[in-house]
Image (cartoon, rainbow, N blue to C red; front, side, top):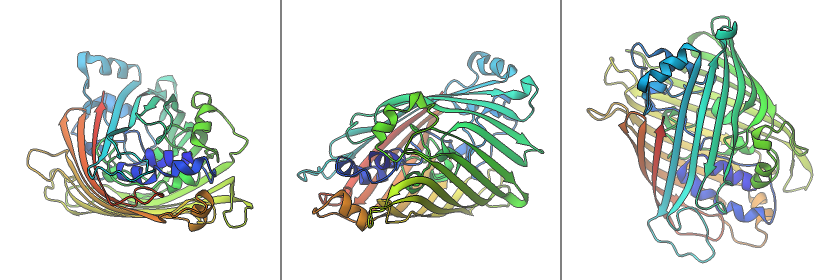
Length: 459
């Protein structure tokens, strides 16, 4: 059950607090695999959001060495604190080597000073609930005669002030993979140890790793088998890029284990374990249309996917063992583009829906509506303002198994407002405020007024 909590913990702040008391169920019933939020680690800055804002003209050569194959573009090294200080990145790029480091840290506090007896969650007291540090290293395989190829390595570590509520402190290999593009980038393949939450969905607000992390996100795909930061799994992906932004991306990988998150981390062999006895194969297929913004053309991105997991999960109603599955769909549309010279600036609206079967998943429904703007204020072209409303539905059968005889809340709802400041190159500070109803499963807690602060550094 802690694996589910981890999923939420790594996803987004308002959703995090909602899931904290699920940890209580871990000692009573290990209902299913982890529910990590799709991303505790950074993804991209608004400047690199797919179809949302333009890349700088004539980017330096070392920017082309960013990690390839994600659903959202990788953050450019030119927008990091060190950029090309001393010409180091340019010298490394001459040898095909790219390096980008990051540090993302966030805290939360419930301003209502809640004193509910027995309630334990992030923010009841000021809580440093997530810290993610890492370094990406890539190598351009064309240097060894493989045009379109790239070797990818991610070293990462996680920490927090409350490991009893959050994923365990850990370190290891986040990615160790080989990427290859074919046929003028129409076909893409990646094989190795992967974090599927980075490869699919593009769940962060505006696709931003550093600026889109303080908004609710669904953990259901992780509950259905997605690997995520902290639990990397071996597998491969294959993507077809068709005309007019159409694409189809599939993956076959080992599922995350159907056991507690802490146990999985303890036995994860620094991130490179090949198999677990309680972990089968997970198969994904995502189909979408991604049309980036351009002068006179507004951004549009629709994607929908299905997940099938051969790992066995307990049916809450019959106690039988069954395979698992999940479905998701997301859409984002730019409805206002004030400046054709900077087509990514403007206002966007989006929505998400996720489903997993309630007879074998504790979290079973997720709905999200979002409104966000990039570069809305003069002189602030990279700032991101977001307003997000989300709903998490829980399985009544799962609650009855996890909390027998106890009163429980069967849903949680969050409304959040966040603003990301690009303070300087590679430095992002994002405060947020969120109203969270049913922040714990049990006991019932009055409406929480959560304040969040996130600091993201790119090196």
